[in-house]
Length: 163
Image 1 (tube, rainbow, N blue to C red):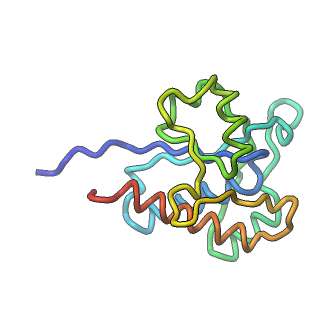
Image 2: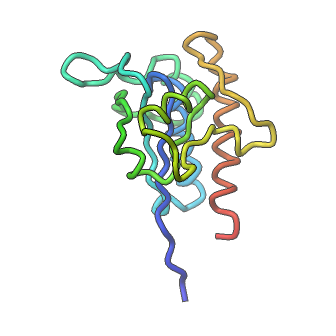
């Protein structure tokens, strides 16, 4: 008898939703797809700021260097556009995963706190918990790729342990 599996809903969050969080979204989507678990997950990303949300509420596309690093690893982010997270996201998602402590502070502010303990930092699942540097400022998209890949692999392992 097959056990009923609950869909796991993950929202990755960074400052603008044009670099780190979309990278995490598409890395995690690839991980779950490769493991044959795509039906068990809903994965998206958002921003804490409205900085990358254009006139009329249409968000900017993924930053070209982030698109390039994703493509170099065989991942396509399609027509992904930045969107700002909202207070209602707290109820919609099982985990809201920030890239750094600053993201977590803003996420908790937007959500009015974190009573269920759903707001976490991506690399907190790794063996070396730390912030993921913003490649918008560092220009080092390769290091960001490695850090996000490490965090996504650790998160996926934790979520699927025993499943």
